[in-house]
Image (cartoon, rainbow, N blue to C red; front, side, top):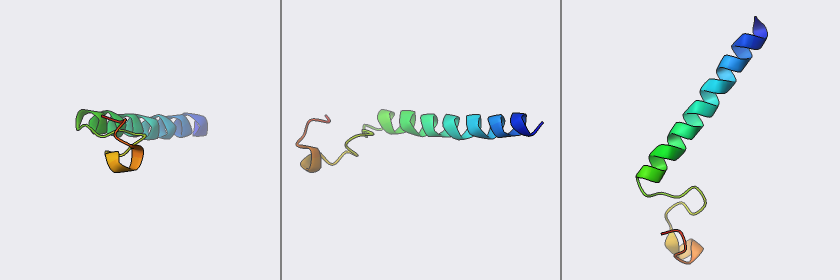
Amino acid sequence: MGTLITLAVLLLVVGLAIRGMIRNKKKGKSFQCGGDCSHCGGHCH
């Protein structure tokens, strides 16, 4: 039973992380760059 609970929590955390990355991508933010093109030289857009 403990294994199932741990698996469920892990899947929840991974799902939330993926959802956040998808939302940021839709908003035009990049995981690598963070949207600050002066930092990465403008290669993120």
